[in-house]
Amino acid sequence: MFIALQSTSRGVVATELSDDGVPGEGAVVAEAALPAWVTEREPERPRWVWNDTSRWYPPLLAAGVRVERCVDLRLCHTILRNSAAAASSALTTAARDAWDAPPRARAVAASDALFDLDAPEDDDDPVVEWQRQRETTAGAGDEGRLALLLAAESVGALVAAEMRFAGLPWSVEEHDRVLTEMLGPRIPNARPARLEALVYRLRELLDAPGLNPDSQQDLLKALQNAGFRVESTSKWEIREIDHPAVEPLLEYKSLSRLLSANGWHWLEEWVRDGRFRPVYVPGGVVTGRWASDGGGALQLPKQVRSAVVPDPGWRFVVADASQLEPRVLAAMSGDRAMARAGQASDMYQGMVDTGAVETREQAKYGMLGAIYGGTTGESGRMRPRIEKAFPAAMAFVEAAARAGEHGDVVSTWLGRSSPPGVELGYDETATEAQKRRTQQRAAAWGRFTRNFVVQGTAAEWALCWMGSLRRRLWSMGAGSLVEKPHLVFFLHDELIVHTPEAMAEDVVVAMRESAAEAGRLLFGGVPVEFAVSVSVVDRYSDAK
Image (cartoon, rainbow, N blue to C red):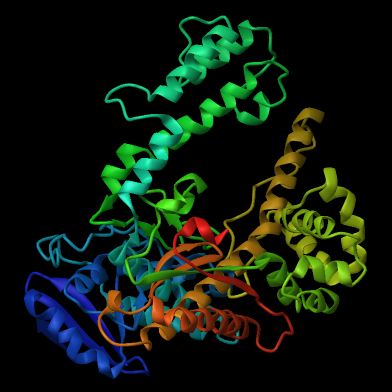
C-alpha cells in the first residue's frame, strides 16, 4: 500500500494508492494532526509517497514519529530522468517540469517549525508523478534492478534525516582541548599562537616581511621571488621544493585548514547539546554517492575524531567495508578468479594467494590502477599482471572506459547512468595541438566512466547495507529512535551506530549480516564475500 502526501492551503491531502496503481479518495489532514495520523497508519507498513524526504520527514521525527518506508519522488525522478534503462519512457522524453527542479526546502532541524504549510502550495502532484514513475520502472525490462535502486535511494533519504535528527555525539570539551593543543589558545580576531609563530618563521625563511600565507596570490609571489618555479601553492607542488621553508609551510597549511574547517567557529555553529548535526545530501554526486550541504560531515579530519564520544553507558560500533570497490568489480564482471580472491576477508591478500602478485601492496596499487585508470608508477607497472590474472574484470572496466571515450553513457549495476559523454566530433581541419587536446579530453572522460560503473555500484551496495542495518536496528529493544541502537554517521563505505553498551555485540552481528544481505540483494548468488571490519569503541578515533 502507498499513501501520497501533498501540502495544500486546506492542509495535507493524503491519498491512498493501491498496489496496482489506482488512487482512492483523498483525505484532508490538519497540520497539527498529521503526526498522530501517520502514527495510526504506520502499522499497516505503507510506503509514504512525497516530493522530498528532507521536507516531510524531519518534522515527523521531531514529533516522535518514525516511518519505515517511503518513496522520495524527487530523488527517484532524477535517477529515472537520466537512466539509460528508461531512455524511451514517457518520463524521460517529456519536457522538463517542476520535478526536475532542485528541492525547494533545505533539510530542517528538529527545532524548526513542524510543517511549513504556509509555503506556496505544491504544484507537483505526487500521485501523477508516482504513476508516471511506476510506468517507467515497469517498462525498463531490467529484472527489477531500477526499482531496487529507487527503493534504496528512498531509504537512504530516510537514513539521512534520521542521522541528522539523532546527531553524532560530540564532546565540545575534547574538541577544544585538541584545538588548543595543536594551535594554541583561542585568540579572538587573531591567529592562534602556533600559527602566528609559523607565519613569523615563514617570513624570515622566504625573506618576505609582509607575507600573508592565507593569500594564495601573496604566497605564490613570495615563493617565486625566492627563486622557485612554481605555478600554484598546492601542497603537491610545494613538496617538490628543496628549501627549509617547505616543512613549516606544509605545517601551516595543515593547521590553517583545521582552524578554518573544524575550528572554534565550526564548533559553535554545528555542535548543539552535545550533537553534531550536518546536512546530508543523498545522491548529491553523479555516481550516487552522498554529499554534504553544511558541516562537512564527509570530511571529518582525524585530528578531531577523538571528540566523537558516545553517551555514558553507550558505545560506538564502527564498521567499514573492506576493499569494497574491488569486490563490487568482481561481482559485476563475473570474474571467477577475482571472485575467489574476494572470498578472503582481506581481498588484496586473497589476490596474493592466487599468485597474481607477490605482495598485498602490489595488489592494492594494481586494483586502484584498474578502477581509476592509472598507467604510471606502481599502478601502471602492476597493470599487465592484473590483466592477466583477472581478465574478465579488466575487460569490464576497459569497456566502460572505451564507451566514455566515444561519448557513450554507462550505467551502474542497478541502472544509475552517467552524464552524457564529451562531445568530441571529428574535424579534419584541426591542428595537431587541437587533436591532442581532444584525445586528452576523451581519455579523461574514459577514466571517469571506468570509475563511474564501479564507484556508483559501490554506492548502491552501501545504500542496501544501510537499509538492511536500519531495519535490524529498529527491531532491537524498545523505545524511540534515539533510545535504541541507531545510525549516526555514514561515509561512503563506513557506518557508525550509537548503541547501549549491552547491545553492542548484537549490533556487530547486525552489521555483518546486513553487509551480506546487501551483496545478495544486488548480485544474487555471486560468490563474492562483502567483508566488513567492525570494532566496538569508546570514541571514533579508536576505530582506526
